[in-house]
Image (cartoon, rainbow, N blue to C red; front, top):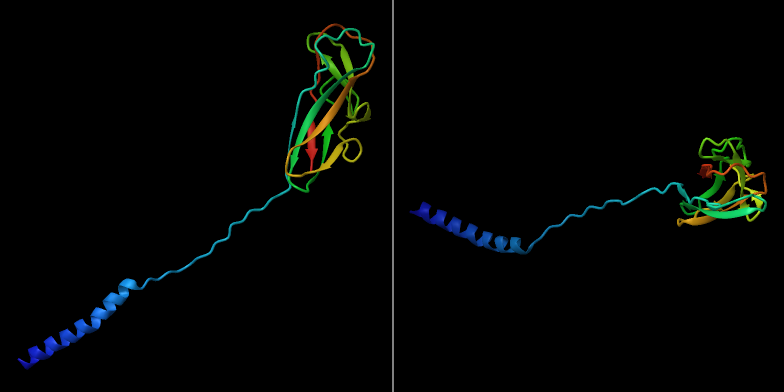
Length: 171
């Protein structure tokens, strides 16, 4: 009987000691933290697009200069220096800044045209630092105007004439 009483007493003491611990455990909370980095790397980059240039659908004798304009849009990352060059185009005999449009039918005639960096001056070519247009990117689109002229020349046979010029942004 004594053994039973001491076991019961012992269990009673454990219960008394455990009760405050259980209630304290209910209000205690633990937390841990972790940190992480968020990062990226911006590199020098540019995009370019160009609109077509049309000297008109109904040209007759080319006895006066015919003018037209087109736009090139360049978007470069902020502070990125760039140059935009124009190749000679696809017309027969085109070379450097001398450009020709070819007839689109069996006609072998050509029409000479010039592309300028400013109205009537500064032929626009593809040699960096010489005849290209330079700028510095701002992170938003920048518009460059291409000034085109067809000089007075011997008028070729009636036809549609075309050349494809490639604009390149160097950065």
